[in-house]
Amino acid sequence: MRYIFVTGGVVSSLGKGIVTSSLGAILRGRGYRVTALKIDPYVNIDAGTMRPYEHGEVFVTADGAETDLDIGHYERFLDRDLARINNVTTGQVYLSVIQKERRGDYLSQTVQVIPHVTDEIKERIRRVGREQNAEIVIVEVGGTVGDIESLPFLEAIRQMRFDAGPENTLYLHLTLVPYLRTSEEFKTKPTQHSVATLRSVGIQPDIIVLRSEKDLPEEVKRKVALFTNVEAGSVFTSYDVRFLYEVPLVLEEQGLGKRVEAGLGLEPVIPNLGVWREAVEVLKNPERRVRVAIAGKYVKMPDAYLSLLEALRHGGLKNRAAVEIAWVDVEKLKAEDDLAEAFAGVDAILVPGGFGVRGIEGKIKAARYAREKGIPYLGICLGMQVAVIEFARHVAGLERANSTEFDPYTPHPVIDLMPEQLEVEGLGGTMRLGDWPMRIRPGTLLARVYGGQELVFERHRHRYEVNPDYVPRLEEAGLVISGVTPGREGRGEGLVEAIELPDHPFFLGVQSHPEFKSRPMRPSPPFVAFVEAALAYQDRRRLLAGGD
Image 1 (cartoon, rainbow, N blue to C red):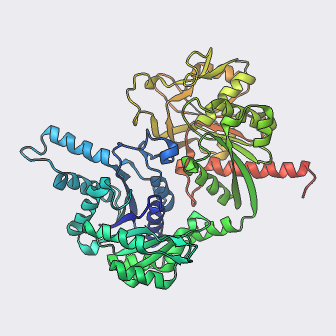
Image 2 (tube, rainbow, N blue to C red):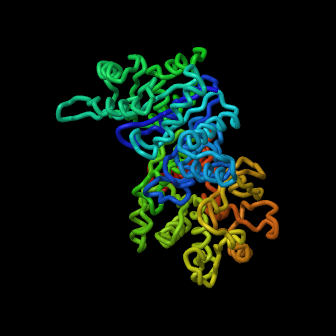
Image 3 (cartoon, rainbow, N blue to C red):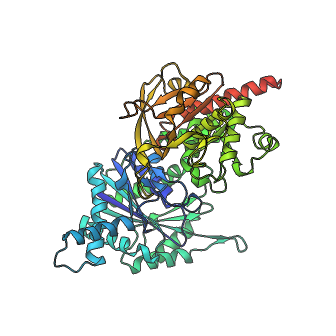
């Protein structure tokens, strides 16, 4: 087993997750079995209860873990499903150590950070490689070198060089090189201090990746190498690029892959990075452009919808089209004029998932606007539920229909808490999470979207569902239930997984989060079909307007 440890310095949010993912793609392109592990130094057990505005999206794995958004990057770049064990937090580590102490596993010992906490961290790192049959494990240590909460993790990865051997370990440090426009020069002093801090805990980086606005001159790289005790050919630049999928190509072009081959004693291989070159080519030279409105409440924090944005981009790649986003703040959708202004010139409307009552009426208005105007609509999780609420109110004649999440006293609870959630205590990790099956009704839009498949698996994250007591009334009014959970004990096939409207160009709602399984090389079917519908709507609009 070989290990690459990625640390970061100077400031947070430099893009360690992207560099880690890109390095994984470079090694995957060489044919190696690669997996990645994200270490988060926060005390939370997982990311499930954090605010999207502060932390970004919560990414859900197939086995139902609520993880850091970087796990999503890993899955998309490595093209493999990851799991709960790929995200380690301080909370998980200390909880495990304390539980072992209470069981008597450390009987007669004084439990300490070294060796007990560091041994727990190292075992979790090794476990990922073993269980996922990896040849190379890339470990990203979250936070910034010098943070007090990162120290046990840095000590653990320092020890890994002795455990696994220097020939099987590499340390890569990502650090900021700011550019001062007033003096028109790059400043390497923050990098020098960052590496000095890392060396003070016993880690000498083998590779340094410099984060900068633009590519760095060779003399700057040589200076960094000299003052950080790193070989001159081991300093690389991760500079700003227009598209995320350019990063593996940029780093490979500079020779990062070859440096890793040399450092880990790997056989030199010419990598196959065709999927990334093709993706970048389409992104830079699209045949068409479509404009998709995302009607949500976290519009000032795009990372809250990170996987959603990537899935739309993947759907665009499949259609050789660029997807432009129009952010619509649902809290500002009050009157009809607000809707007309917000959705002017868009080719499709997407209502994403979310929690809480804030902005719900705006989402309902967005769903109604798409239904009445014939604009392609895709509702994800809560986006499906608000479409059901809107249909119940304005088509099925169920006045004041709502979800009990937002109005516990609604006379028509068309969306209600799942029965198995009634006795759930606590909020962390207690939702319906992970991969669940969906049986698709033949002859529906959904069946066409999934290429005629009868059963598919998508990832979920929710507590509420379409109330099965109202399904007959909704179907009678014209709503099509096109996907259900098969063989649900005690409720037959009562859990609605997908809804659609038969007399609409494209109106689809899914209870799942298909964006979590979308990859550049294997885009999510609902998003491919959604972008295709947006292109068709654009064509119809141009035709009616008398354009080409």
